[in-house]
Length: 390
Image (cartoon, rainbow, N blue to C red; front, side, top):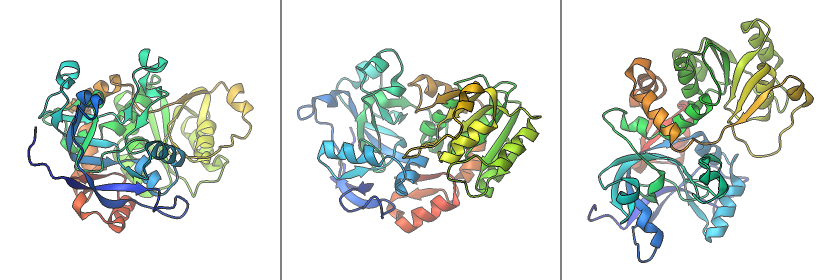
């Protein structure tokens, strides 16, 4: 156990009492108590760990909460149930176990001093879905940084069952911190066979970019990247996209006719075999449906709050489209696959993530002590992925 821990620490939070969801943006930097393992006070702490966070990734979900476009109901309802108004943000992390509950080693094989990352979905372990090995759709789960406190702080306490031990000699610690979103892409790419198939990636944020890397590694014949940001498309090209398409400002609902025409040209009039919808807007969903060939597969991953409209919905059925909702990762099968893909030097995935997406660490690593809302907003505008250093 690490001795002489401070009693308080800085954290990035959303305060529902002070931050009006409709008019505010960003997170607050505040002082909070450092958590402790206390098995007498909290019996569940026998299976909990205290982690000293080294790096924490800033996810598209964090950006969505920053802009107040996702998870309002889940954040507010969970805080109301806890009789709190402040939620610690963040769910992507890498750190060191500095204290473990008395049963952690026996049950999970995790010890003090281990380097770990971990899954952001804290599942119940008791419901039907957990019991049949489908924890990613657990109906009684909490999500770090959304419906339970997250990782944007130096010290966090979480259930040991969520941890995955990492070897920083095989995978860089900064990349270990983003195993969670990389796992989203692995999960999406594992839903159907990609070898020899033409695919489109709609939305080239970090998870979309991971998807491009993985699709190539899994043998896709053609990868088409689509985004509204020219810089993201230039990066997608460096990562292996065979073709790119720059969308104008997305429509509210309808598919983009120029995109549909271009993808049909690139696929000899058929449409792509598999589309990964990674952006979330209503129009992007309809773009995905429109550019996928009859009998093809649509991976729905992007998240937005609110109701969506699908014009001519009967075409989804008549054309025999297969829609796949993708949430989280398969715990822990996806993590094992992710580790193997990143550890394999031959595929170049880890190297490209570090050199191209993370720019060798230059300007994308932000020390927590340097945080200001203005600085963070600037970094998020400049880079598809940024990482907090604690």
